[in-house]
Length: 174
Image (cartoon, rainbow, N blue to C red; front, side, top):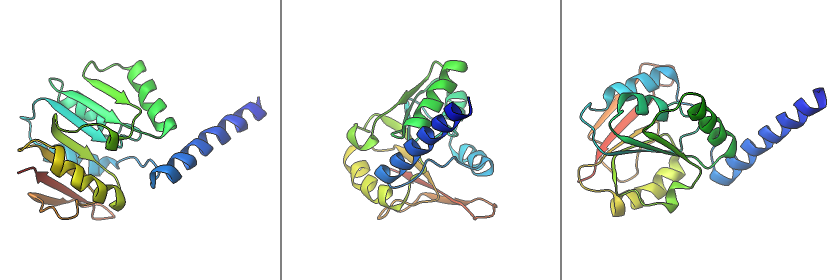
């Protein structure tokens, strides 16, 4: 039993480490205070498709699905363990408006999004900038916490009163 536990632990840890090396960042959950402020900063009148890029453990995707029940939430995650965790979470308490997708969001079109939410890292934000310019429809809202989109001017910046003074950036595609 102990050997099986440690074997499973090493497989899970190895998967997270491998996914982190491959993507350039480990799956980090959004802290509760940041999540609260981020969700409060998003307008109530969002319609259509909401994308979460790099869903990790689902700390943003599931609250988005609860709040915007009339929208379709698509949560992309490439790391297997967080993806499976989100899938299990969805299986245990299904939300009809959410899809958890194990795919690199750089390989899918983002043009249908009315709202795009992300917590990535500088390198990904740099790559994402050009993709958003090319694909997002005018008026789409982009909300990113911690990391800005290089070359974009935010519509607003909310600084959370937490230990890290976490910034939440909101952009509107012109």
